[in-house]
Image (cartoon, rainbow, N blue to C red; front, side):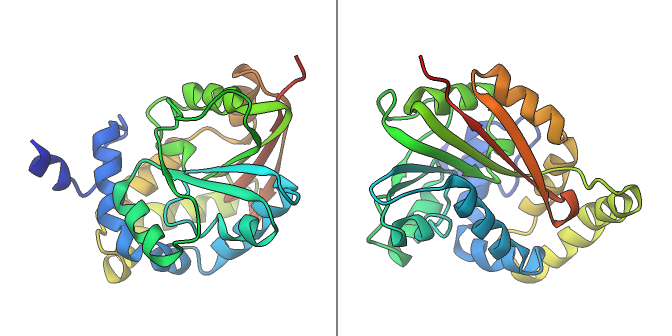
Length: 239
């Protein structure tokens, strides 16, 4: 049974956790390089925007969900925050621990986080909420582990606001992205799932509504790269 799971190269849009984890295990070795190529370097700009939006201060406790190899967590550590990179792909965690052993990596499922109530000042997730089997349950779990008044930052693919660009972007997703992935990724079939999952994901307003339905308040967003990516922010209300 284990061998069958490890053989999965891409997940379905049902987002079975075993399939998603196996898919990310397969792409872990060249994950950061592939993202850099596919985004044409924009992923670096997006990481900077996430860090700024989190407003993490020295000694703040930051949970970086779907952190993968920990690349997104490094700026928080350098700023003096205590950051926990958390992911449920063991392959990602192995690569991350080898590359950045000073980070406190943790294994965890976003729908059942292994942390106590209200322990984090900031919870952030970049390009991972879309891959969770139950995003609403994950948003509720993020609320649970965040202190009252604490912050949520979600960076996720979204919908370009300009119609001609949106059409061009969808063509890139469904045609060019899988082809480029074949040249650089250790598991290119996974990027077919990536394209399909982005196209099926809600737009900016739709995600903001789901965030508030999970109990967060003051949900707002701003577009990055013309709406290819949206940065959502919200707060946990004071009890």
